[in-house]
Image (cartoon, rainbow, N blue to C red):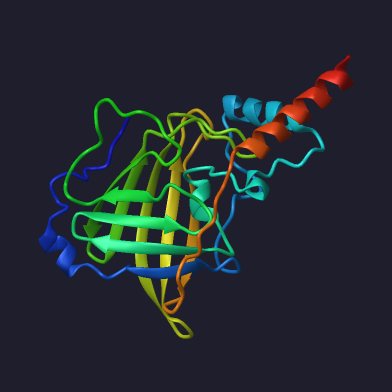
Length: 227
């Protein structure tokens, strides 16, 4: 697995020169990108999509409707809920109003662990390149859905502030997904966040139980239809 050279540069001195991301933000849905209509699937990727479509047919697959945490990169696509960045020299923490656990991007110079256990958010390390935080996330679990993901996903983000005539500044996350199992080439999606300095995140409790019940019900319906 090719890794970015993100070790040894996450010092407090670098962070002191960096822009300040701390605050509450909301994704600007009108400006932010989404999955392209045509994705560069490999044969394995297209097979995964076809299998998913066959399994769910006309039934809606919407974990968000059940308040289910989906993990990276889907977590960063959340709209209509606030996202809070907390910036410290050794770590950037991203807290999602509707989704948990938070993301932790380590900027203290560490690398990825050798014995990394796959999780939905994966393991993220970052370094500052001028005014841009470059983040690499690995160690992700495989993801089922309209756009699947394999355990070989590697996500690279370039997060920065841009001047804006209306908001003063916006947060930009240029997110590139490298997944040799699913995509024949990297896929890049750019997200824009506007500041909400006077807002606080509310608390939402999510439970996977109703979502799992829904999936079991769909499976039972498919099994009955196939008999």
